[in-house]
Image (cartoon, rainbow, N blue to C red; front, side):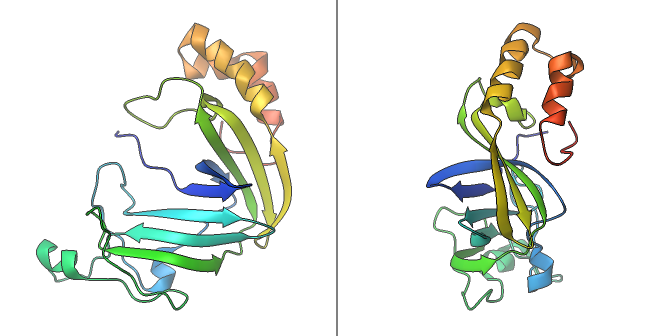
Length: 193
C-alpha cells in the first residue's frame, strides 16, 4: 500500500504528523454533508485535515474531494462542498481535491489520545506508514471533550526502539523485545502496537 499522507497537528508552534489515535475519529466529513471520494493513492480515505492544539483541539484546514452520486469525474472537479463553520470551500490551488477549507477554527470534542511526531530519525519507507518510533520527537496528547489535559514526551523510549530497529530491520522483532513491552506500557491509551 502507498504510504498515506498523515493529518497534521500544530502543537507548540510545530507542525507534526498525526501518527495514530485512540478514542475514535477526530472529524467526520459526512456529518457535515461531505462525501469524500478517493482522488489520490496516498489519500485513500479522500481527505486530509490540519488540526491545532492550544488548550483545546481545533480543525483549522480540510482538503477533500467531495463527490455527489450521479455526476461525472469532470463535474466533480468543479464542485465544492457545503460551508463548514461558516467557511466556504475553495478550489485547491495545487490540484487534486475539489474542496479546500481554510481558517475553520472548528472546535473538536475529541476524547482520547493522539500520538504526534516530528523530525525524521530514520529513512522513510516507500510503502506503508513509518512506525511511531521513526520520529525524533514523539508526544502523546490526551483529551477529554476536546480539552487538552496532558502532553507526554515519549521521545526517549522511541529513540531506544529506533536503535533496535536499525539493528533488526523488522518491526515485529523490535516490539517483541522487553523494550517493546515497556513501549506499550508507556502510553495512556492502547494504540494497537
